[in-house]
Image: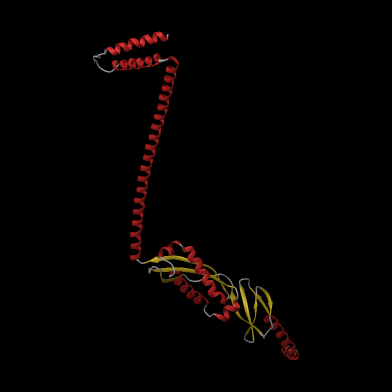
Length: 295
């Protein structure tokens, strides 16, 4: 039995070898690329093709998958670097960068340590951008600073086939002396604002008082104008009566005023003695005569 098997193998060795070669050739010629990766294929040591996700075919023994590159988004380790602002303040900036590889054929043949290269590039750009801004601008315009850093990093790594998806400034740290100085400045600014608010309140109070006085003066002037108009109207009526009735109307008005004055004097508070001159008695008489005559 064993001899029979040996004879069969010796007679069909060529076919067996051929079958093994065919199977191996099929196995090496078919490449299934996952969705999250790209394969870089070399032919005789040179770049030949980049295989995308799915089933791909290559020439066995001539083509070789040299690099399997993940195209998922990556995050660099959080980095901290010192920088000096435009107004000579030392700050410590904590940054975080996210990126992904778009063109692996550029990445594998142009840069060796991708993470280290990007981290070094980010550190240099952060220091350069911080040096263009004052400390107040760094703290108040953080979103603008992040945009400028991301744009600069994208321009720097474009030749590496990399896309920077996001760059973040996690924190801006200051030394204790700078913090104390900023706290003093903040307290001084609060005191100044309080004084300004108080001064504005006093100014508003004076303005309201002036408006009230102006309104009172306007009302007084308005009352005087009405009184003057009334007096003018009364004078006009008297003048018209004199014109129509002669001197007797004038005498009547004078006598009536004298009577009203004496009456008001007699109605004063307390007990007093009133000495009435003879002219006054004559005025009473004239008034009664005129009144009687008017009737």
